[in-house]
Length: 262
Ligand code: SF4
Image 1 (tube, helix red, strand yellow):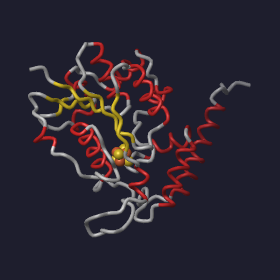
Image 2 (tube, protein in one colour):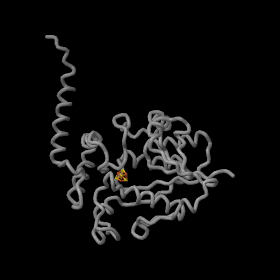
Image 3 (tube, rainbow, N blue to C red):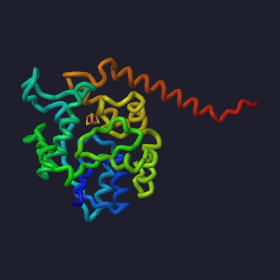
Image 4 (tube, rainbow, N blue to C red):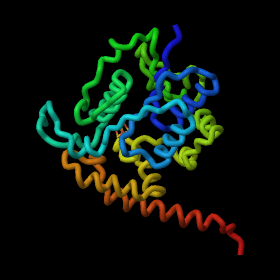
């Protein structure tokens, strides 16, 4: 029996390269599912729109969960904080938003719909409903992330099977005109721009190139009372540090044309 391949499409370079290589290899795609959080970098959102055109008449199925609503307004219905509003920032120990994303994905796969107000975190038991001999969920993970792959029989990692690293995935994207405005040449990560789990140097890149997105993180920090964006870091001080470092970089760049001769 031919397997039905369901593609988990984030809009980033790896899942994009996976789709493009499947097209090149004439591998039939059953579904492409994209979960939108509203906190995508603009070049990722643009790339998703481009893919929707590129893949026509095939369609990208898109389901939304509003990350800001969940962070700031969503009422908790169980646990020690039952009744309180807002899940706050995700943390290493509580990446609750990943759970919402998976719920949206699984509802999309099984029911073809996801309503964050009605369905929330509940999701169908995909392991029981999908037969791995008939279906396979494809995750775009390049060989440099091989340590993160799981052993779920329903899930496969084509880029790893094809021995493609992140750089090769990016060149596949470039070959098809998915350039992300050159972001991946400056920096390797493009998850939610407001993800508190990203390293400080990624935040500095956002501050430098997307000040509006940095300001949005600061706005959210003002709205979320449950926890802090980075527990030990004050964003005023971090912004001051970024300003100092960027000024130094600018001065060094300006002086790099001085060759030391009179
Ligand atoms: S990238 Fe960060 S904020 Fe976005 S869904 Fe993943 S853990 Fe949550």
